[in-house]
Image (cartoon, rainbow over all chains, first blue to last red; front, side, top):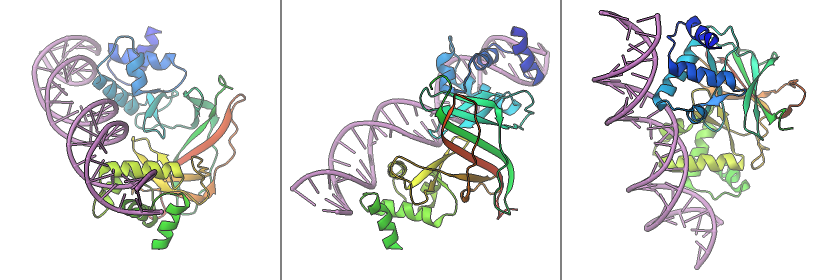
Length: 138
Length: 138
DNA sequence: GTAACTGCAAAATATTTGCATCCTT
DNA sequence: AAGGATGCAAATATTTTGCAGTTAC
């Protein structure tokens, strides 16, 4: 477990520090996506807010987590599946946001359909968020 | 034109004020979606920031505009097609965000496909944002 | 005239930056 | 030892709230 954490960080050539291990553990233990505020709240002992900002930013840059935009002005972060290269996330899955419990999760099994868009437009990346009721709440 | 503006507001039982007309005009004249900052910048004379916050909030509640979440923590606002009832947007179209010019627009012609999700999950609303190169930039 | 809208001031929150110190390699 | 990561302080930016004055109906 410990080893796993360190491996993830080392694979991205990041130094292994307490803060990073702690935050990464939160993600591994959480089924859903986490916001900055979630992390601040859930981390038993707390880190400086600034450290959380910087760690999340680093994780996003290195492809350890990806962001999920929400319409209430908060950004959620979720673990990437293996294979996200640096600065190149291929979020080929959809996100599900439960309107009942508020959890956001990645539906990694569901992949994104081809969407035909008007001539002249070029698709690079498709993001899909579905809102509804999740398995636990239904 | 003037009449049109007023009609939109009156139809939602909002009083017709200068600020609202001005902001609504910005949306009508803009092909793409606007952020709070865009509005603040583009409005020749300026309104109080607070007025913009409140106006946008009112417009969203009344179904005049809808929000488009972006992953850089800004919310974009775009005009709803006629037919969005109060508090009930049916954003049955997709959003396109150009990575070259930065514009975000609604592709009203393209509607959202059926997406099969795992058993136990219930879909209420599907949001799709496609990033790529728009017609003007390609 | 009354209710609703606006602007200003100020509070509360969130995010970014600089720098000295500490930890990882 | 050197470079990177962290914590603290402080600067910025963003959003919310209260209230008094103004405007729309």
